[in-house]
Amino acid sequence: MDSMLEDGAAGLALAAVSSVSAGAADDSELSRFSRPMLTMAAVLTILVMILGVAGNLLTIVALLRCPRVRNVAAAFIISLCVADLLFCVTVLPFSASRFVHGTWTHGGALCTVVPFMRYGNVGVSLLSIAMITINRYIMIAHYGMYGRVYRTGWIAAMIVFCWIFSYGFQLPTLIGVWGVFGFDPQLGTCSIRPDASGRSSKAALFITAFIVPCVIIIACYARIFWVVHQSEKRMRSHAVGGGGARPGLGAGGGAGSGAVSQRFKPDQRHAREGREMRAKRNEWRITKMVLAIFLSFLCCYLPITIVKVTDSDVRYPGLHVAGYLLLYLSACINPIIYVIMNAQYRQAYRSVLTCHRQRGRMGASTADRGMDGNSKTMVSQVSIAMSPVSLTPGHGIDDDF
Image (cartoon, rainbow, N blue to C red):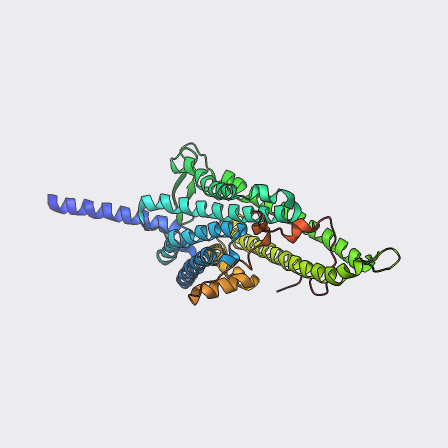
């Protein structure tokens, strides 16, 4: 009789635990999605993870191995790739599992580590994009201070700052004094939750690690495009109305000793201007590529943020799944942008895949070589914001490649 009562009590306890677990799953956001939708989301998440690992790893190897793309911007792009690679390895497998099971199934310890890594990698990614944008801004608008700012030690300090700030900002949450990392039944995943005092770091994290870098990036690009626009106006004005005496001729048009120099100076000047314009176009391509990276970041992160705010009751499950997938897509989209927008990156990828080692630094940024004192970019020789240059047709700053 006693054994029967004990068995009955054990059965009731087991049923209660199962009921609580089922209730947590039923209350979760993912439980409101159809099974085919979750299966599709899991498959696409795994696909993004594979592409992200392969693409970011290939980019890191290419930038480290190929001198032609090894410049200041490449150092920050490597930092960005490492963050995306860690996101693919440490976050996406658990996200796919969450879609498969409909809830979190990996225990309390990982429920703390995974969101810590997720928020940290997102912060590093955006701060790295901000650092590249600032690099482009100083290159174009304040080249006189470029060599003083972008020395090896300062570049390393900037990259270290991105990582320490992104992860250090979460340490109070990690130790439970400003929100806690834990399972959120409403979301069906692990995230930042209010602590015992009702405090959460989510709002401060969103403002400090997302809003502020975005404002800095937008301000830098507004200034960059204004400077480029002013430069183009001066170039066009110089090309149309640039008269005056021809080099090597006196006021009366005589030759004399200037006739010898006249034979050589125009060719030398055109050759120099050709090199300068190629350097300028290369810098502008990198600038446009970084802008595309930033815009893709916004396109990937804003939808899920907007959906969470406007549809907290999950009335439109498909929008939530699409938002999650766009969020994960950010981890693999940057290498695709590099391939589409930069011929030198395509060549670097090709050299890695074919095991062909590039030689020389012909394609490297002349500005970055100039900061070592070996050469000067055309941005320093002909300040693109202040001094016009005579352009040959087909060599404008907006030419495609």
